[in-house]
Length: 231
Ligand code: GRF
Image (cartoon, rainbow, N blue to C red):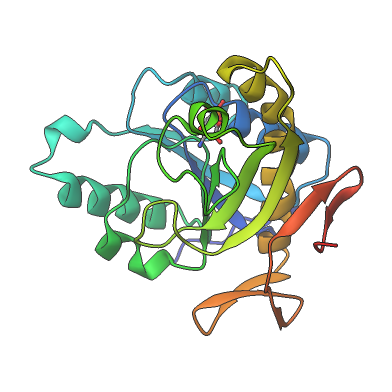
């Protein structure tokens, strides 16, 4: 017998999976935005490469199905990533958010997802791909720092940037101070970008991002009232 489709109103919402490796404050921000009615999506899965990630507990508390896979029980990274993304596909997710997911995803496994996966990275990309971004911004003497949400491609932290949040670096800032000042902005930035993607306003067309039907030539900026085009 054919399975009947769920008839509740949420079933029509864009389905989103999230991957997170750690504390999950960005996931919490997504769930909170959803709870406030500001993010019209349905979270269908939160997955992690760490069974003890607090992000998984946050998801479970919010009633979102969880998945923990241990990379050590796979032959290699490729095998792990293929299985993980297959399970994400099986969850019915249409979009995937990397929210503090600390592994590079295999390019082949990613291919069917390109244009539907976003990541949040704590730097003003293309500056400081990879780790220790706050330290590197301080060491470089930058006067400005920030966070970026970008489309994920096979290149580490290298896909087109969609939107950024900026902060000033103040005298006396250390890594912790910068991270603490940036995090609340990350928590507004990621839901805002996911909202555009899930609403179909942000699309991946001809190998690049388009917003409302026009190529996005420069990252959107997070301002007091949300995202706006760069001035
Ligand atoms: C955030 O700073 C995010 O930008 C980076 O990893 C951190 C994750 O924090 N990719 P959390 O787990 O969301 O609290």
